[in-house]
Image (tube, rainbow, N blue to C red; front, side):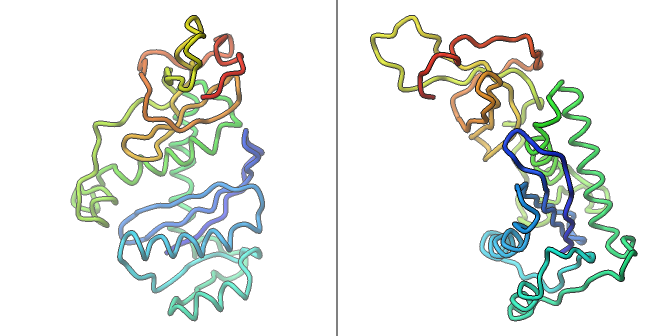
Length: 239
């Protein structure tokens, strides 16, 4: 497994960093955005546990550069699990080339999606996570046109749930009092990611909030405009 810590600007949710991990054999990628640089050791431990439990596989090597936030304590913990930590030589990022290249491609994809969707730059955590998600289910020539997901799980990924990044989305509002019959029944939002094949991440600009919902209708032809106004979302009614 390769690890890279990507420094970003402050986002809508206060995150500033991406802990990016990937397998050099399958091309399968994982990424977690977070607020503090020193969050990365804990994220690495949780990610390794997640991989072992959900993908039934073992990690033998952990490649990283001279990142100082990765402490000796973490290295010892990994060694106790039989994982060999390999660091690059000082000032030689090319030795961690796979992670650097993968992170660069994820960034390019995320930037392209965000620009096409007219998304504010501080929404980058959603674009990054969606970029990684899409990369994992995209077929690759070096895998005999399997996707990394299929290579790892031996199952073809589902594609019917995919929608254009940043398209307008009408999330159904719930828990509206029965007497408030004239209140809008939907939030006007924009699609920014997946939590599963049937749970979508929808950004509500008027609340500067990303909600998780299954009940949503998509308008694939419309994109974000700062001049869109969602009057209903300004009313103090819970989602």
